[in-house]
Every structure is written in C-alpha cells, then in structure tokens.
Image 1: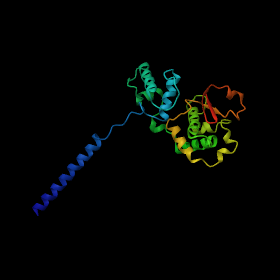
Image 2: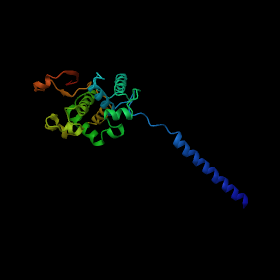
Image 3: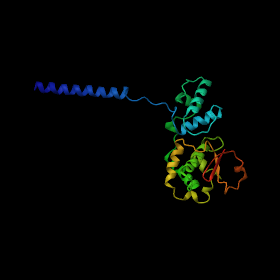
Image 4: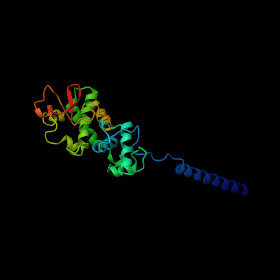
Length: 225
C-alpha cells in the first residue's frame, strides 16, 4: 500500500513538472509579435504608408502596396524628421505618428471583398487578369485619395463614378477570377502605378477624362491620374 502511494505521488509530481515546463515554453518560447509593416510586407497598410510618405514628398513612385527599398527609405526619412526610432520599420510608434491604424484593424471585410469583386467583374469582365486587378487597384487608390470617399462602398457607389452601376453590368453574376483579382488588389498589387481613373478610349466621350495624365494602358483601358 505504501509503495502504491509513493508511486502515485511520484506520478503526480512528474505531471506537475511537465505542466510547468509547458507553461514556461508557451510564455518564453513563443515567437514574438512581428513588426506591423517592414521590408517585404504587402497590403493595404503599406499603401497607406506610401500615400502618407508621398504627400510629404518622401516617396515619389507609384503607390503599389509593396514595402520595398523606396518605401523603407521614405520611412527612415520620416522617422528622422519626426525624431522617432530610426529603423526603417513602420512599427506601432511610427504608424501612430502617421495616424495609420494597425493592420489587425484596417483590412477590408468580406463584404468589401465581394463588393470589389463585383465592380471588377462589371467593369472588366472581358479584360485580362492583370486588367481586372488594375480596376480593383483604382478603387483602392481612390479610397486612399483625399478627393474620394474613404471606403470601398463609398467609392463604388459614388454618383457617376462607374457606368456599370447604371447599365446593368453590376447586377450580373460575378466572374470567378474577379474574386481572386479583388484579393490581389487588396494585398497590394497595383498594375496601374497609382492611377485613380481609367477609361476605354473607344467608348469614352468625356473630354475631361481624356485630358488626365496617362500612367499606363492595360487591355482596352487607359489608366490615368
């Protein structure tokens, strides 16, 4: 009886030590939270960073949502100017100073993704995949631009913004590739190089849109600023 009791106590002790080991590992061995945006990052948050830097003249190329060397250099310049920690990483302190929300709170919702896919399908159903992503990128570029509404739905439903809302194309079934194109645009791919307008030169009758500086032509669409 005594041996059984000792064996039981020994087993309890081993289990207790094992639990302590697991808890210690969970606390000390878990990977540390990664910086929010740094070299190699992609997405909407990077687009916001680039737009902010661009407005200050610290970033001069297209807003594409890709945290490359130019973006890193711009962040360093920003950090130097405002006496922040200089590391080229848009961590919590830098993002707070830029008035940009963290990535955990800034990503578009599923509703936004579906809405973006629908406008892409309506406006670029017959275009190449790159052309479809380009239309999605224009919508997102407008969200970041001070002259347009600051939400995806606001941009899409802005009166007169897209002919697809009035010609019946918007209500048609969404082409499968457009969901992926919408996600790629949200993830930061901008084939247009920061365009906020586009038009089909064969059908456009508005002289003002034709006067805008052209950035790129993709398929049947001319993209401009």
